[in-house]
Image 1 (spheres, rainbow, N blue to C red):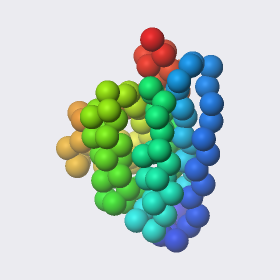
Image 2 (cartoon, helix red, strand yellow):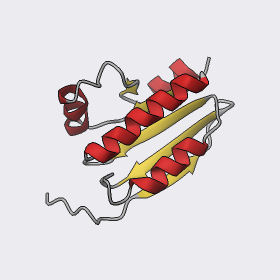
Image 3 (cartoon, rainbow, N blue to C red):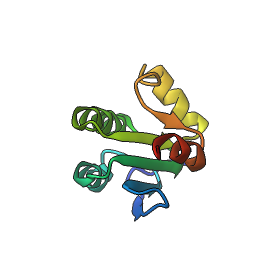
Image 4 (cartoon, one colour):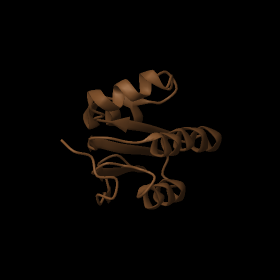
Length: 119
């Protein structure tokens, strides 16, 4: 599969059954060319818990990885929870190689993340 850095990424905000939990669903490769809307959206989220569903994200570049680390830092400072959900093997490998796999909060499914964060 060829990677086109200018491919559109779509970002959808979903409500949830759990009170004060926001889900952001990202579709498409998240790169330096398109992560600004995502970054703005994550910065504006005031919900106690934020889930970022990466299930339809085939690839992220280093700029987008930096953005995800920024989400971690800002949520930690604010005392709010977050999780990255449904990351594929390629993304998990990138987290591992970059040494952030132990820093980032990840779950394999929305159900797992919800049951952990909706307490």
